[in-house]
Image (tube, rainbow, N blue to C red; front, side, top):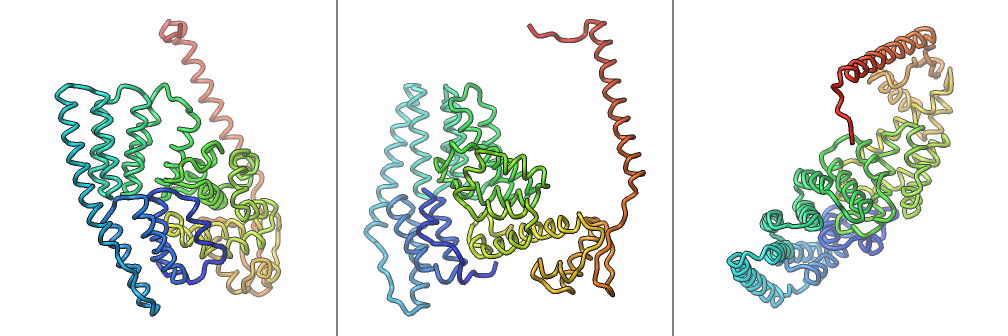
Length: 419
């Protein structure tokens, strides 16, 4: 991916303060790898965060190497690596794991289930802090056999999810989100469900699934979640990811029902007012306003490690939807006026419209290149009405047959009745 020279709206410190834990460090390093103007600042922040909030000596060494290379490119002096911290932390990691291993053997000999689970969790935490996500996940998974309550099972699932996100193993994230959802007798069920929907959204983004899946998941997240899950995803991310994916995949009715009339999601949009403005502009057919605002944030979104791979596709889909919506009310469209509205040339617009007409028939029209107009094809209203009638008749027939089958089953006393 090309490097971003100057994000238009992103203030690094304000942005990174939205996150906690590993995801903050990973995002800072991602920015350093893709933005020249923020490279040194983001690497300095990441190096300090690794020292202060983790015990990951390998990550610190790698980060400092990158930082000093960045300084050298700019003619700046080298920053001293904290060798004392590296040596001390490495010794402490080994000592902690050795102590926990002895402790665990004692609990296993005495068959103290709760203590075994707690000790395995602390082992997982130690590996996680040291950046050994594979062993962290193994330890967290082992706690399942020693869980005695629903709360314990949920803790296991979310610990595995956290470590799997850091490892980039989103298949594991999906699997344990499903396990967590199957847990019964959950306290604060809405909050837990919101966390799981947020996880599903990240899985869908990572695996490049339908953008409607991302939007559906994030528009279900209650505002109660807020920034309480910001070691995985921030409240601002919910607004940005959900809003852009909704714009790219929802029709006008869905935008109204799932976004504009959704009180929880509207609260998230207040955190990212530009997304709210884009959606409002699109819904009220102010397409040039929407697209201009969207384009002004391109570089900012290219520095988001989950969103960046999708920016070209999302922007293309939103623009295509705007072009289609612009044409719908008219029998004829003046291409010169339309090109002005979409800030492009007439030849460029003709090429875009030709693609929309040719690929999947998104616009039912033809282009008059001589007169520079788009002429909508008249739909056969009679044929459409007939198709709707046939479908309604087919649906009615299916419903009637199902009802008759149920009546026969009731008569034969073959229906399982509830108490």
